[in-house]
Length: 201
Image (tube, rainbow, N blue to C red):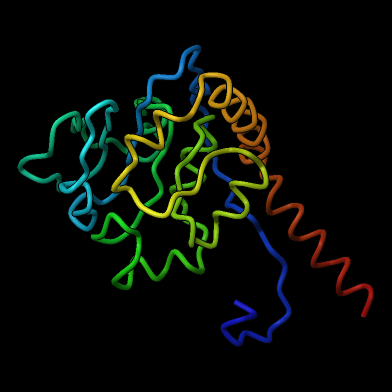
């Protein structure tokens, strides 16, 4: 945002905290699967997704009439219940209509925001897949709680290259972060940082 011309004093939140009373998702084996939760009508890229060796589970309102092979619609749930039903190894954080991540106002928004969806997945103990150009990608990579990709066009190959050990390490990190998000630690840290900056003025 500094690069975009914002001059107001800021602190970085990272990701949003997320109240989530459901048990953490805990996979013993990596299954090459992804989960997407959200408004499916505005996520038309899902109808272009090609998965041969992986599977995608979709949750949300207004699903398409038909999805490609290995993509299944799992239903619509209330926000507080949704974490209980999530399936998949990775939670997909992706906006817009394109498999390449760019194009349109929703895609452009990823350059600046920290999607609430990210916190839904991470608070459930689920590592995430994000667009490499998204603002949130640095946080995800720095904390090793997921991967950042240029495009979903070759997501099958990307998932295939991840080893079971690499996935389990990301899952452990996601579990550790989940406890922080559930306790409100991100906003507490941001407030403390803001207070420290004010005190130094």
